[in-house]
Image (cartoon, rainbow, N blue to C red; front, top):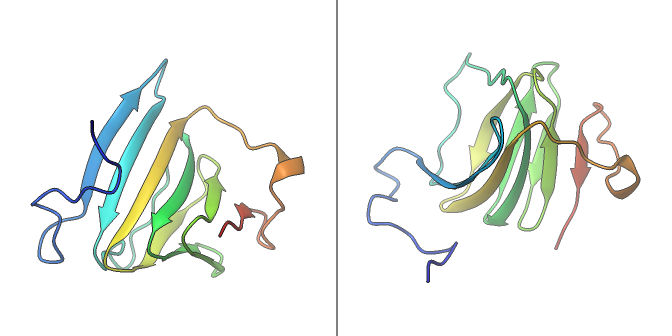
Length: 126
């Protein structure tokens, strides 16, 4: 049995961020485990994805910055919905930071997820 918190030998601060596809579904749907060790998006670069993304921080903490200058801090248990084509970047991760990310044509029920002031949806966990 695999464990979501196991750290492959290649997961060290000296290596690249670790990405592992756990599941694939219809269309572009996929679930990824990401392990960061202080990794961030390169300065001046932005994610501008063709699919929606939902992330949850399982261990550690992270910050997501948006093109408009707002930033969201995510602690253990916090999750965030990132609609397609919303430019964002990872501005901070702890060492380690274990994420679970879902990609695809997905939506987040607004009744269950209060809106972040910048219009993004964030839900605080633990």
